[in-house]
Length: 416
Image 1 (cartoon, helix red, strand yellow):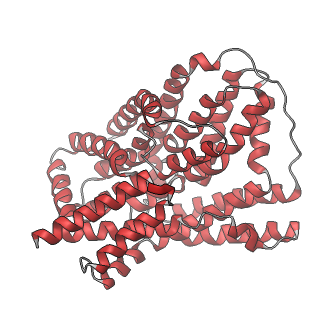
Image 2: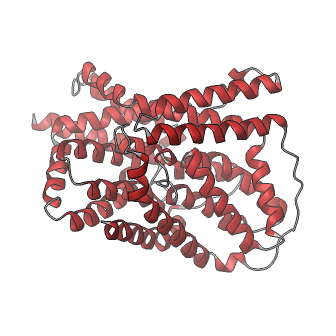
Image 3: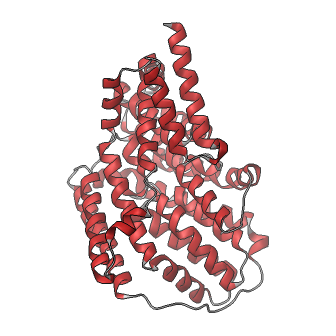
């Protein structure tokens, strides 16, 4: 039994490390699925238990499918390029104003389309706009990376990790706003001020006042309308305390089909451009966490949460901080899955669960390994010829995430 537990821990740790480090540049999903498969081959997890673990993520998969289809449809129709070029025009030659506008755009996209959309779709558009404006790209690219996490608890739909932590059953929208409205504002504002201070030397001088901006096509307007309609639907569904996955998926499919009809193009082309590997990645992580649960690790975490619950204020501060930093050691998806399962067992006070969500969403701003969105951001800038090393990101992350986390957690605790 002890040997089986040790082997299970080793496989889960190795698989998670490989998801973060991507040996041989193989996709993250390969390593998560390989770890899950190895657990099955060695008899460390029963096939029925693995299938049950995969099934737990049904609402998350549907949510991701819908958001990816929406994002890809909007990208193909030039919506995000149009938004970035509009920001350059409104900057009127000021790098500082351009930085503010890019950051504000990131807030909107993260809030209503999720942090992964900001990383995957907005980042290349911002890079292209920075080049056209002859502005220093790195401050703008950092803005994309950090706001993708800092704004990811404005709404339940802003980050797939939110669905993971709450097990697909989100709090009612009114309760969500009561818990996270002010902490979100603090996280966004503190991150902005800290990043602007860190990048102040690269935000001096002037940039081009205007760049070429193609008018938004009817299909692009339809994509924008589809996104707006999806937001309304999800706000209503969230207010009714219903699962978000199926409505998001249906909205994404409907928008894709509408736009495909307008441009007379097969929707399969749009669907084929989506990064579907994120689905087996998440499924594999669910299996890994289920295996850890079988060894008693999550029961131990749940016991820690019960102990912290004796003093909810202190417990919230400790648990949120620990999970924020742990998310950078193992990536926030598996960290959130572990926390979710532990919360289901421990049933801690709501303030502790809220602090855990702030930690799992905001904590990944510390390093490039913290979240899937940041990893996707790094891949996006590398395709454009830019790169940010681990230590360079850590320097910026430490200056921005730590004060933002302290401010967001402190605000949540003051709310009571």
